[in-house]
Image 1 (cartoon, rainbow, N blue to C red):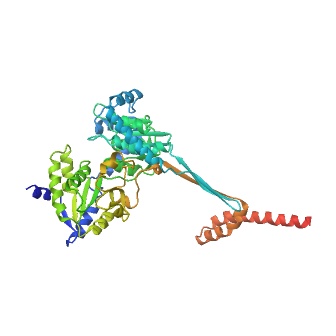
Image 2 (image 1 turned 180 degrees about the horizontal axis):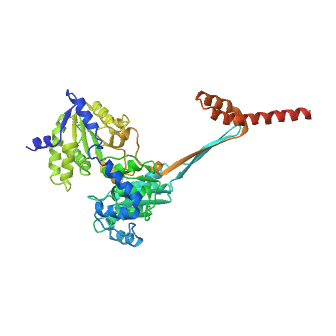
Image 3 (image 1 turned 120 degrees about the vertical axis):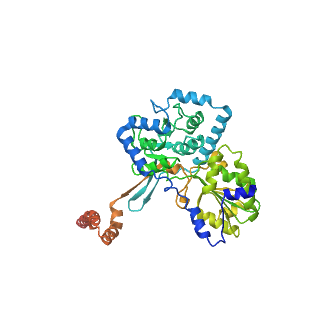
Length: 453
């Protein structure tokens, strides 16, 4: 009975089925823009916060976050008191995670550079941190100190002068102590009690109490994702994040209970999360289904996970491991687990994934909390062109160049020719006028030398 019930819970699609192409397309098309049409509502919230400042923001915090707030910013005293409340073992774990993430991101910090060419060519690139960034940390039904660490530490590593964090308060107007503890060890400078689209609007445009930032990073609900998309251009954003997802490629060496646990671990995040198992092992399909049903019974967030798995999850049965890997690469998952005998070899064939978890002892939770690489990853197939959050997201680059007369004389004619090819004769004229002066100066020098002779 358990197998039959679990089969109904998690659908199975087979790669040799006549309908596979359509079913697989449905799995891959997991973007949820059309699931909730919030564009107009978000635009209205942003406009009201932009026009009404603190007054509008306070009203939205009460309406959506359920808290009556007088002062948005967490005071030093509140921060200190919250950190004191954190259990010592929890404090140590948060500190260890922060240390490992910091060490990982320190490994690659881009630096300014320059080059000089013969004839007076001088150019390069200056790399500087953004002046002020805003980090969005989800709240509501779960607590995410790990999100604080993953967003703040790359900014801290490159010494962003002001790191501002926004997170929804509880009904009593406070923020969970573990979140504030994580903010402290991760290098956050200021914390504001606000969530949702109204928090994004406040960070993007500023209010009397909330400073305007240069970039907003961090995951959130469809409201937050939509708000980030709408303010992009006024501020930078990391990416258009969607619900979390995992794809697991498994062979005969995989443990069904572990695979089921990994599928559930992402499904418990959100009803819109997607968990996909891709395997050529027929026996594994049934056993994983049984384990999913069994483990959901004892899960704290069983209702959320069950709905996610039933409506968004899938098991893809393939012909062989090669096909499984090909489909996983096509899926371009946020998290890709290679629960196979030789994961290192297989990983070399994968081009599209936010993060790859190699082998049977590296569940996604390892990367979520303590391994070191960032857990803010591209979702919805955007791993084809987006990358994990990193120090690069908190830096800006300015190129510079200088041509002395000999260098402009060397390359000027080519510049004029290219400008004329594009029909931009004004561009060519701006160079030609300078070349005329360089030629006159050269003729004058030659004439002076002839007189001397």
